[in-house]
Picture (cartoon, rainbow, N blue to C red):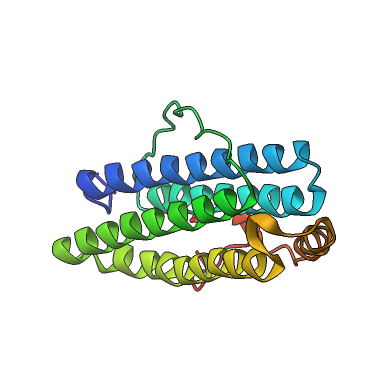
Length: 183
Ligand code: FEO
């Protein structure tokens, strides 16, 4: 008996998004390495923890497709983007990546809506909310750096910003802690 409860189109699209989230994870890891190399250990720590969060997002997509009787596929990853030119560029890029990801999530929501796949539509709402948080977080980074003086920030301001971001609570959560409210 066929127990698959998701269309092949959505199975494929969610599998693609799993790979997009993995790519985001690699991208933040590479930015974290860049920041660490520049001597910003706190910012590096923040970016690397965010990389872990993106991996958890990928696992949520993986788990959901499997739960619906589908089978996601891990594809090879493209090379990560070039290193940022400076801290302003880095935070602007984080914001850009998040906005692009939001657009991808919205497309998936559209697809689920068109298919009347309410289970998938409901699953995706967690990501709709999460993207609001992620975009806000990226906007905050840009604002904090602006207040610190942007590219002209003094060493002291950057030191303080680095320290603050290094101490930002880790919001990453393991996929095995998922519930129906938090897939
Ligand atoms: Fe998984 Fe930052 O979006």
